[in-house]
Image (tube, rainbow, N blue to C red; front, side, top):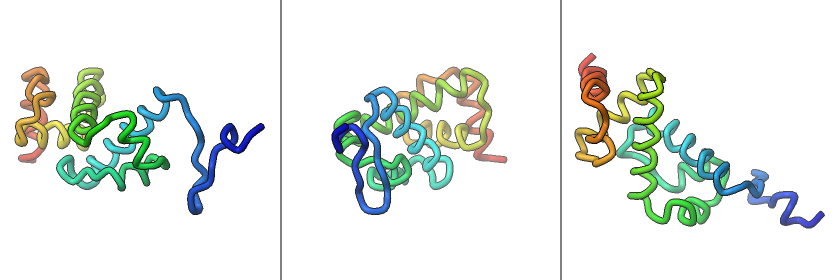
Length: 122
């Protein structure tokens, strides 16, 4: 087995080679977690990479730009809320997207948008 197949070391982290779909999901989960903790507008590529245990280049390769990553985060947030996942962090992400005029946030169903805005007030 080659070093490439076993993963590679970067500092103290051991990062593994994953299928694109799996890595994309890992990056989105990390970005959503950080947005829940620190706010949607504060998402940074380097912090997401650290949380997802991947290189920033992988984020660039999969999402191309931060704008595309933010769009994917908002799309995934709306998807989770539609499925019934009612987490305060997700509602705050949606509300922040609405106030920022994010297209994906404004496409959310009206009841979700109202619930998200109400979560900021409470």
